[in-house]
Image (cartoon, rainbow, N blue to C red; front, side):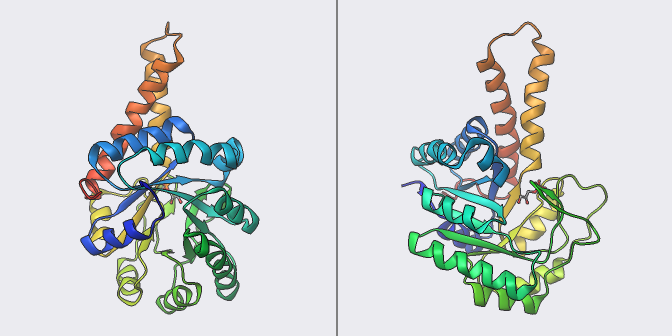
Length: 284
Ligand code: 13P
C-alpha cells in the first residue's frame, strides 16, 4: 500500500503548501533511516537513487531491499531514479519496479530534451511509473554529471511551458539558480522565474540542490509551490559524520552494528529537521 509513485504525494504537497523531501540514499542503512524517520513523523517520502548507487549495488539487488522497506511502511514511499542520462537504464529500472524515474536530457537542445523525455514518459506511464524531467542546466556535481558555472543556464518560462506540455512529465525541475553539492558562495536564485513557471505550469515543481540552502530559502520555494526538494550531499555528510564520531568516541569498538546504529541516528536527525522544515509531518 505504501509503495507508490510520486503523483499523489506531489499533487497533495502542491495543494497543501508543503514539500516532499527526496533523499538520495546510498544503501540499505540509509534507506531504512530515511523511511523509519518518515514513518515516525507520518510524512510522505521519496527514496531517491543516484545512478552510481544503482550501478554499485546492482539494480535488482537495490530495488529488492528498497521495495521491502517501502512495502512495510504504513506511510507513502516512492522509489525514484535520479538524473538518469541513460535511456536503457531508465527503462530497465522501470521494468524492475522503480515507481518513478528522472530522465535527464537537459544538456541537449530543448527539442531533443523533449523527444527523449517524452519517449520515457510513453514507456513509463503504462506501468504507472511517474517521470521527472529537467530544463536548463543545474550547476555543480551530482553523481557523474558535472556542470560548471559557465555551462549552467536557467530554464526559460516559455521553454518550461512547452517542455511540460509536450513531454507530459509528472514532475518538472526548472533550473533557477540552485546547485548540486555544497554552495561555495551565496547562490543567485531566480524566485521570480520560479513563480512565473509555477503560475503557467500545472505540473508539480522540483527544486534540486537542496543541501546548504537556508531555512528561509526553503520556505520561500515551498511558498512559491515547490512540491519536491532534493537532498543528497547532506545525507552523505550526516552518514560519514555519524560513522566518524562513533569511531573517535569508541576506538575499541569491534561491533559494526553499533557503528551502523550511530550512523542511522545521525541520518535520522538530519531527515527529521528537513521533514519539519518542509511542513511534511502528519501529511501522510
Ligand atoms: P544536493 O547534493 O545539493 O543536496 O542536491 C541533491 C540533488 O539535487 C539530487 O538530484
